Length: 130
Image (cartoon, rainbow, N blue to C red; front, side, top):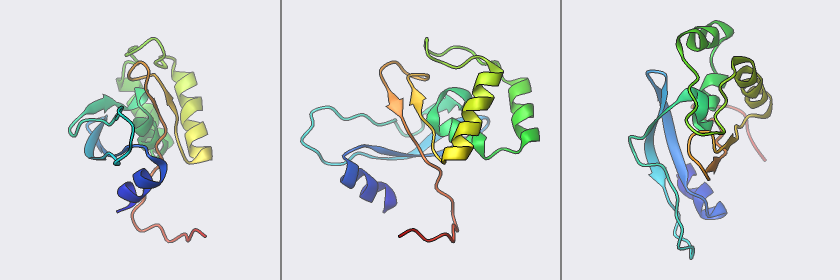
């Protein structure tokens, strides 16, 4: 219900992604009914490397320092687009920013002309929001 509510309020599509073998995989998508002729959403089952997609960076932000160092030691940061971050220190700084702000912004790092800004959804979050 949260994906649908968010999409209906903002007019933006919403994707639910999970961590699978060092990739972000889209498991659910909701596209709101709007008057726009352009609708963009990830296809269910779509996999992207964690380092170059916004949802992946949100997932990486939840890694411990040891887990992140391990991931970075076994992952080649290949450019997917001309905007992909391929420098380890720059990516680490980007992940720290995600940890500090609670959301990520992907600026055409995984696909040209696509900007994405996910937030983590945590099960059992006891914090209340007014």
